[in-house]
Length: 103
Image (cartoon, rainbow, N blue to C red; front, side, top):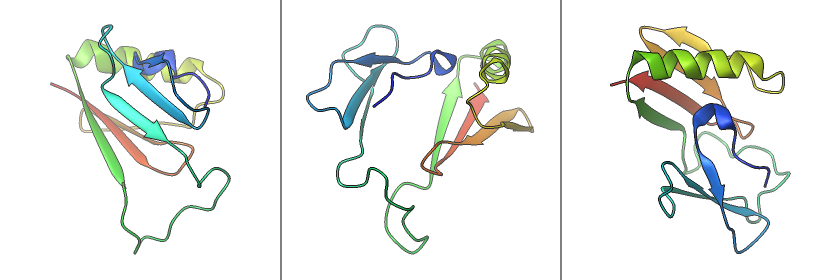
């Protein structure tokens, strides 16, 4: 898997397999574990299938949200983010909705 984007302040930790990643913030062992086992290159699952549809992140404050928006704007490969009511939303490459809001 590619390294985590610095725009989200996550750092990629060691992984037991190329299709898995463990992400950490602040030097902790890992906060989030990800995998693409048996799904790499597959079409998105139908809406009726069980699975993750949206992931919400709460950032430390409005300054962190503004920094994230600025960082995403600087990355040409990142999808366009939409700002609404103090939150920032975008879809990841697997069509999962990611929403960031300030605390």
